[in-house]
Length: 408
Image 1: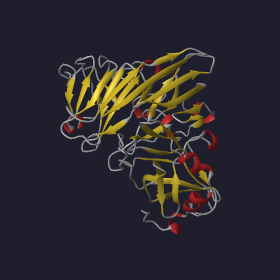
Image 2: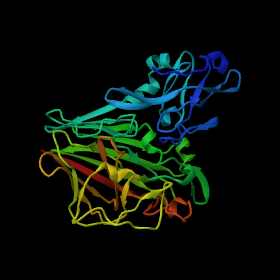
Image 3: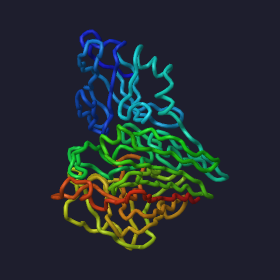
Image 4: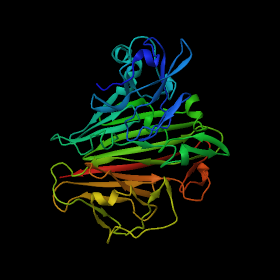
């Protein structure tokens, strides 16, 4: 495994110290060690992180690298130093959200012997029917695979050289907050891109043969980032050759609750068994205007639509300038795939915004329906002022969903 270059004695780090890494607002290129240091690591790899040896009350910088652990069919982010071993990045109400804590021995030893944190990270639920098999991870309630009975996997399987995500849930914001900070009712909070739900360990509350529900509830730790008593249920359900993913947000508090919510599933490009140019065909045959992000925010300009009569031929060059975002007009359904051969029908509900994204050269395309977007240039950084923010009254709930049907 990769390791650091500094000596343990020089760094002052002891194996029996308590090591804390706090992944609040983790993003590619920007990782946090809350309370110790902030390190810009650039594309998931870097060299400076902070540890604290509580026995001596000192702070230590140690060389290290970050990347994924591939286990049980899912990918878990990890931090590695040859003086601390593995540190899985886990956020859970049970483990003090945003902190992964081990005491005694190396992190590698604890990864094997301390089952509490790894079990939360590695928990995987499999649902099946006669046509499909889907695996869902507790970490982020994130769908990890979508397989037909012939063994073909229709989802991206992650690659640290591009992107390790599969199908993250975006909540309570979609997109980036400037400087990873925003205001809620005039009070400032730290908030990473796309919110914190995708880095949280959810609780499995229902498991059936072809259906499961994972739940994330407000905790003391989430209240430090988002001051509302929320409940977020993510249901994955199989019906024939379709998987239906539903996010139900409940406001359990006594005041109106603003939020953004969205889906970010990455499907294989090309699809399994497919060849030739892949297209997006909007069922409404529209040509919605496009916006681009600049510094994580939208400007006023609406660019010409890349669609002609609802059809777009995908090319990696289209994503050199990041995602193609359609604030409205994309409708609620599309077909993705080549002119002939396997395809995927993708539909969504209660989600007015839509985006297409990949990293040029990667083997995936993200089909992203949202309710809420990144901030617009010149606007305040209040959550309530972000475009398409959803408001939920006290005691109410709302559901948002997508369906992916595999064809061929």
